[in-house]
Image (tube, rainbow, N blue to C red; front, side, top):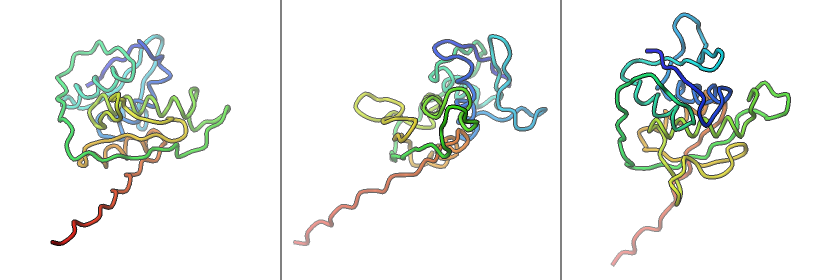
Length: 179
């Protein structure tokens, strides 16, 4: 299915990192006729593609990332929080003014768009006291959380968006004293 993406809160230059994250998480896919093309953009709209069962999740993720999606899709069902894991996410590549690694918008905006898209698609979960999609600075180091079963999808999503996501170590607890 092809999903039309229209700028709303975000311009089309923010669509690439959101789409890359959703591709890496298995929600979106590359266009079949143009290998390795995640987004078609032209004029005032863009297009992404996914399998029909993923349509609702793709739409929810892109809306949360700041876009309007006029394409009709199925619903995206929230699986809820279950066995939540926190991950630390850092840019995998250097950021710079003339950098090709995070084109047009830089690492911080790439990370922000990726984190929002993954959270909106229920791949990652909200974190912190304000239920945000991430805490920290997406351009240097942020934390996200997800259900343990989704850790590979979150790592893959951020990897496609040019970030490294690593699960935080589980804090050690002292064993209960014997009585």
